[in-house]
Length: 265
Image (cartoon, rainbow, N blue to C red; front, side, top):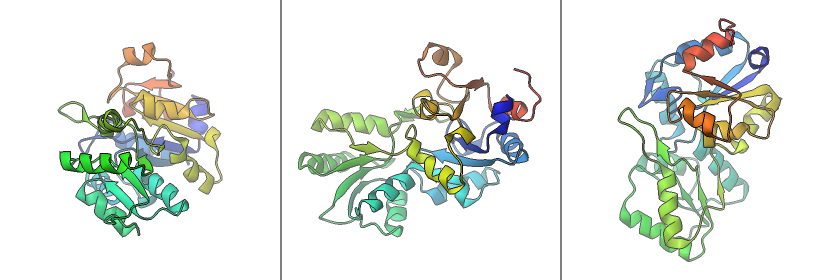
């Protein structure tokens, strides 16, 4: 617990951890207050590319959470940073209208007839025609990327299909998987934040509800991980998994109490 409280950078998943359907989960405020009271930073790191970073921030603020623009990071930001560094600006982008408009506003050509690469986001407006158009591009050999790998997205009505189901359908049709994905469990999501602050993985903690993205991000590094049981993963699932968290908490209320030194186990 002392090691946990001494960490300087906390990364927090959104869906199933901090919020559910844009409503904050129990303990969200207390957790942010507890982290900031230690002098550490808290950054929301979400794979959910069905919303623009601006929308994520607006929704989190509307839920009553005090967050600044640089405290919210979305998988599509990491994807676009990588593509821009490679000189890729013309995209066959598969995304909903909001994310498509936001991407265009970042200086990418998303309406080109001559794309340099295909990028698949979590498209909540996916149609059969859009899927066929992407498949045709991939069969022609276009480089292929995706924002993240999540199979399901938690909601109050239960989990719904996320980008991972689209990836599976595309693989069945083309035999191709993305050459790179950018959301958790890729450490590329958090390293730029740490480097900008002069920190390393040994200074960081990741908090989330999903084993194969959130908790897996910390595997093989000096980062600590905390699994909360408010989303996809149950305690039994954690106990049966080879991917283990440094700590398991029922929810963010428990974690806030641990950070504040009010829990002994």
